[in-house]
Length: 342
Figure (tube, one colour):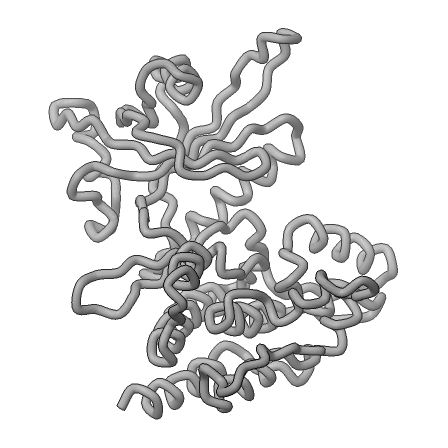
């Protein structure tokens, strides 16, 4: 999919203070900027509907009616692309996102990649615009910050319900042929939407780093290349140890995500990675702490969560060959849900 030629200048101008955005004959108006990080910016937009337009509006293109916004609100991620490597990364994110269709994975609804002139030196860069459903209640991080102010936590039941949904989305990715790893599972990539009378809906987002999960490393150069890639794309506080120190003869699989999943469960419970304490120590070594699974539990008069959840986390933070697969995780979390929901 691309962007209609008539909309290219409008698309560029809209994000820089001008007119509306057009993506494939669908028109959107920017409401406000809602996020920014690195070369990415996120905007809340509203579709300007015109049923007589070519294609009949965005709702005619979206396969799943669940993702059609009742009030026309969506989000657009703008990515500034300055070189071929960045362009290939965005194209891969688009390709990979198009493979996924699951209630707990954020769907890519449409996209455009365009060329824009840089006025300062009259060169041309690319910009990508990715259209998603809008989830304005934020991520697990946003919810945790709001709850901390009120001296609140997620209940054990809520923790398990959120985690179970992440497992469902991840199982979908790990069950593809070939299996895909997300590679960047963390609380900031988990959207939470509350609906009255229902448990929070958890949605895993950001597939920029998602790649086929299984790799056979057969040389030192391949091992170093993987480590360098992981250092750029996999959040260090949630990165599996085999991505920190990859040997020249090793097998990497989707269980790198299980490590990140265990760290994320800890963070849903306690608001940070189990290894974040290392960053506050004068001589702390994050890689050493991760490779040796040196988890630090919060010091509390009485634990806020039952011990089986702590043991569950430890089970996921094991060496690769001992680490469970997602099906094993789901069986166990379902037992915990049954135990702590009554």
